[in-house]
Every structure is written in structure tokens, then in C-alpha cells.
Length: 327
Ligand SMILES: [Zn+2]
Figure 1 (spheres, rainbow, N blue to C red):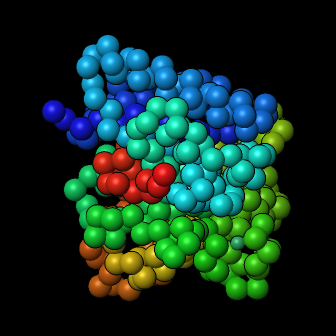
Figure 2 (cartoon, rainbow, N blue to C red):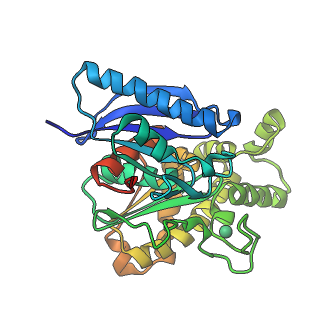
């Protein structure tokens, strides 16, 4: 009988759930509002409700569930059965031993991990990284999170914080990051950095011929999408901005290539939805920021699983026996 995991992916807006087979087939996919604004008790109730619903569905089809995998913001403590830190957007969730609660309710082994790490594990196992053993994933959005898979195993570090790749310093003494350090990579290559770069190019452009100016007049607010859309149309100013975004992103990725010598680098997150124009800008600049011998073997690709990566990551926790709650 094929192995199956019951998977939960808790986000700031939605709680996703589903059953994933070890081959990577997702079934019974469900979406509930996470209701995080209603507090930790409600979040936990929703986790239990979703689990109960999925177990009944699995039971109807005689699918045996080997474990419950949970992807959640924050850092997991498997002794406590909840988080040790993080999850600032989910007030009170830190002090909720949800792994213990799920185990006590259903008596099925519970596994959990940080959502960014779970996403990386999902992409590496069932998405873009299938068949690869050494994978680094960078999720580029508001910040840059990551996940590191070495020899097929998730690298977690001594305290579970490994993969905070957005805070490697690529511009020492530069702009101050949310973490307090001046010059973190994510301050340049993620959302704030992209908007700053774009604004600098716009401010320098006296002719104002770029289509970005007219789009801005209509839409009011500068977004990465406006820049990437204009670049796809061949807008000269936009192409310059995208080139600099590619450079700023390649600076950090180059260091990751030098450190980990991966066979694949996966780029995901909201910014990566820009697609090939973004990927190509990055690829162009990688040779300037990495050692030739490490660089030659690495394939740089976009993530494939989109919003389902967390669910697949949760299943990989179960099948890989990662972060099991110890009762
Ligand atoms: Zn930082």
C-alpha cells in the first residue's frame, strides 16, 4: 500500500489541506479561512476541523494516513509541540502547542516545519527539484527566505534557523534591513529593494518617455509587476531596472552557489511570478558573482508548485520523518 500523509499549510489568510501520496499525488484538496485575527484558539480549532474533515474523506476511500504534516510560520520546537519563535503575524500562535493538540486529538504522528522551509522541501521533492540531491531554494517576496537540501536531506542547522538566506550581507554598510543589519541581501533583491531600484531609475530619467510613467499615472502606485510588464514590452527604462534587479539578485545567489555547490537553485516567491524575464536577468549576472567550477554544474530554475508547495512540503516532512512531535 502506498504511503499517504495528511497535510496542512497554515498561512496568514488561508489554511490549506490535502492528502498527498508518497509519489506526490495530491487529493482531497481543501481551503478554509485561517481566521488568524480571531486568535490562536481559533487557528487551532480550524487545524483540527480540517484534519477531521480530511481523515473522514480518507477513511471513505480506505486511505491509511501515516502522519499529519504541518507547514506554519515560525520555528518549531518538537519537545514543546509548537513554536519557539517567529510567526509575528500570528499573535499568540507561539504559545500554542498545536502539534501536541493534534496528536492528542487524533493519535497520529505529527510533523511540522517553518513554512518557507516546507516550501523549499516541497519544491525540492515534488516540484522543480525532482531527482536532484543538492538543492538551494530562494523564495523572493517581501523578504527572501530559503531552504537548503544537502545530499537529499533538509539542512536545519543547530537551532532550526538555517536557511535565513535573505540576511546574508551583500552590500556591507548599505541600507538598514528589518533585522537591524546594514546591507542584507533582501534589502536589495526583495520587494523593498526592487521598488527602490525602480524609483532611482525613474528619478534619474528626465525625458519621462518610459511607459512606466503613464502606467503610474493610471495606477498610482509603483509595483514590480508594472516594471516587469513594461520590460516585456521592450521599454528601455524598464529593461535597465530589470537588469539591475537581476544583478542584485545574482550577487546573493552567487554566494550561495560558492558555499553549497548545489546542482539546482530554485527561485520562487511572489517576485518569481514575473517569470522568464526575471530569471534571464539573474542568469546573465550569475557569472560575475560565482566561481566558474561551482557555477557550471548548477541549473537555475523557477519554482513549479506555486501555492501548493507548502502542502507538498508538509508531506515530505512525514515521509522523511522530519520534526516529529515527541510525546
Ligand atoms: Zn537582515
